Image 1: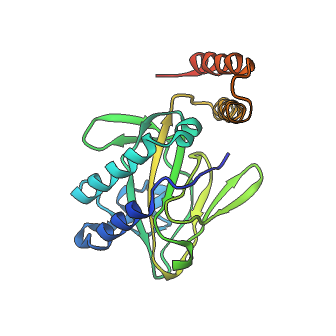
Image 2: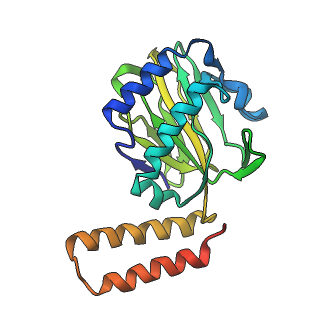
Length: 228
């Protein structure tokens, strides 16, 4: 399941992040620095060095926005979020077909996390560059993703995916992984659908007695399936 989450960042935040990234200079390194053996062979982009001050500061802004976004919380049910990274594609840079590594070590912590979900947060407006689409294979075929700046796409880390070559302009984005409290994707999807139904019922029929029962079902299923 692919989930689009709109307006994770507002216009002022996007502008601030882009200005910092444009001034990053030597903090931009070969994107293969964080790629596994499979990914390194097909990855051609730049990214901000993980250990840099700019990566930590901008990552904190992204994490803060995610913590305040109820749709992200509902869709991901996050247990751990990998510190956000930032990449740049230009001049025919691309990332060929690959599957993200199953386990990653969070830098400087010694903590390993399972990558249940992958996320891309777009920082460039789609009209600012040609190409650069994120192509994700799912049960419905290949999904093409190119979102407005500030929007995020969340998709299973098990998916085969790639980024097409950027033929004009610059594509800036943040990317990261999520270990969910609910490992099973089907169960996570059911919980998301149930939560969205509760949200709609709360809006359309506030005070409906069914809300208490549905909310109880949601939390009891979450309690049954959560891994902490």
